[in-house]
Amino acid sequence: MRRAPTIAIIFAVVGLALPAVAAPPASYDCRSRISSLRPAPPPAPGDQNPWQCTTPKNHRLSTAVDWFRNSLEYCRLTTSAYQAALRVAYRHAARYGPKDWIVFMDADETVLDNSLYERERQRCGVGFTQLTWNKWIKAGMASGIPGAAAFTQTVHALGGLVAIVTNRDSADDEVTRANLKAQDIWFDYEIGQPNGEQDDKSQRWRHAVAILGKTVGGSPKAVMWVGDQVTDFAILDGQGRIVRAMTQRDTGEHIGTRYFLIPNPIYGGWSKNPEN
Image (cartoon, rainbow, N blue to C red):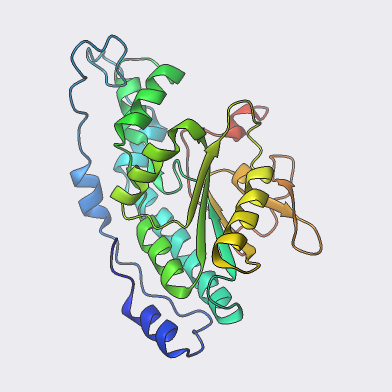
């Protein structure tokens, strides 16, 4: 794992009050990311339905995938979102004790970048299929979203718990965890979607709170959510208990203060909204 920021370690070790808003400045190298995006490896011998495009067509990438992979704007918006989230994490670290607070995060397009899969599908003029998506996941080739590793490592150093709840198939939890570790994404808990369960993450969020409480021997409180869709955020009641997931019909209140949105123009529940 990447070394945690020195300032966070000092505060944690000597027990000093953490600064309310102080956070290390963004230092992510966006130019390096854009120039070093790797090409797809060749398919495995005999694979008749690879996730890779073996015969590219004269098909231009969508502006969404192009922007996601190649623009400075995407990288800086993402790192800025993580910096804003980190400032709030410092406030929680000053308010709660070590392992008393939880940051919930999504995986795909929040901490893991699957744009290479999207690029390959579009190069062949085809879209998402469950078969090729499953093969992509098992390849464990998703890279890290800009700013995600530093954010999770710092939350850990500040005493927070990171719980990653994804709608990937729970049967792929082992390979997902390996992919997260390979990208220096810290997590204390990860869970996918059990077969037959709805996409709504409410039940898994509640379960994660209970499991983490047993693991750390306390009653940690869910205080923050980071995701690329509003359905990655929980609607809470007056006592801070998880009621349900946010939907496109909600107002989006607290995005930017409790919930932090990572840009994803490629896919999402918003695509089912009426066109205006």
